[in-house]
Length: 371
Image (cartoon, rainbow, N blue to C red; front, top):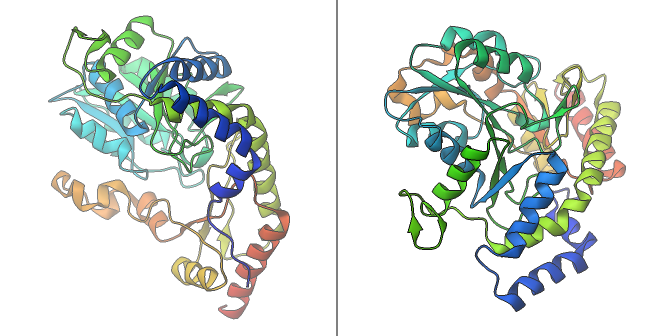
């Protein structure tokens, strides 16, 4: 029986082992563990890739969202709108500022926030929208930007799953006042621990973001404000710099593998393949299907040696953490329905066509046996 992991980070490491090992060795030899040239080199390289003025490295993607909102002045009494089906970072950081998270249901086709339901959630207390580009799929970001402009509220982009994703030629992260990236190990560009960054073209906000992430100081001991400790460390920065030249080719491989999945899974009536929004480049951080009898299929695939995952098994407003908001599952019908159907199949650049065929055959066999 084959064993196919959900993500194969070891294969990726082996493919570029000399570059990774040298990057780690350099940092250790120079004891450049906090700050220093390796952090700056990565920030500069990522800024160049994105055509953005400022990249501020952070300890993780969650912190980067919190820092953005905190420095925009969002706090007690404010509301921030975000999507109902995401990782909790998209909403818990809102609460951490003192503001209230306001959830919007998902688009039934694309799985990202339904932009047509945003304006009904806007109140005089609304200060920002966090648009989350899930799975590598772009939101209808230009429509959302126009909504923000009409109501004079901030647009923040959560790009944790959308490195190099784009809509009409504009990459994820370039429409908002500032955007958050995660470099968690399993991301399309992943560190070997927690890491993240903020990107922005706003000079003054970049200064404030960097200051707040570094104990409120741009220079050691010169604390202009009280801040937090959320710095990208030298080891992770050097590893990310070693990986960055491969990001485009890895992205191309993900897109190619998604096409192979589409080829071999098409025609199975019990599943829906991931749709790609017109005009967009979907970078397939996840290859997420909608499946009938999802739990049975998941267990069957596990027995066949195929690891899968659910992103996410409970919509945010249905979590115990948000019980205090008084929502009912029927308030978010599409996100609640998705809880029972979504299934993420193995997806990474090193995945082979042979492995995808094996997975696809197992899925066909499951439904033929359990029709």
